[in-house]
Length: 162
Image 1 (cartoon, rainbow, N blue to C red):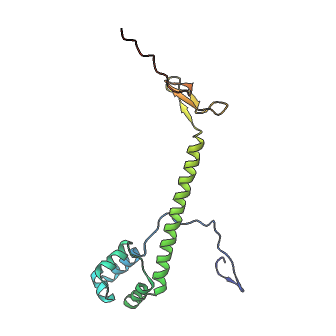
Image 2: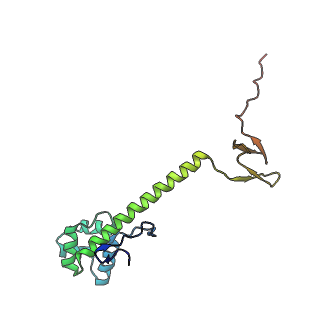
């Protein structure tokens, strides 16, 4: 099994694993735990001897669960401190992966945009598809239903005043 001891050596996890698309803050788990126990945030804060604002920020995902907070949650809730530290670590790692995936997507879209889209446009008048590049790779503009070579717009000569 991957990630578990194989004799004396660890078998590495695959780097190309499927990762979640959503980062769930550990505060959501804490909120569910409070709801199951019938406790309010202020009740938890009182038992932990922490400000209500700190508990509220943890539940909203604004404040991280530190090792000290995890130990306090272990004492008050009877859960393991490792659970809370692991949930926080997984949350931060998933957020970092999503940010990295987002940046890679932006970079990929930027390189495609720099190269130019390779799509076809449907000409309005004829109903036929017109490529956005000619055979030599030069840009082509769709003009009134037909394709025209992409040239800078020309101005009509100004009328002379008499």
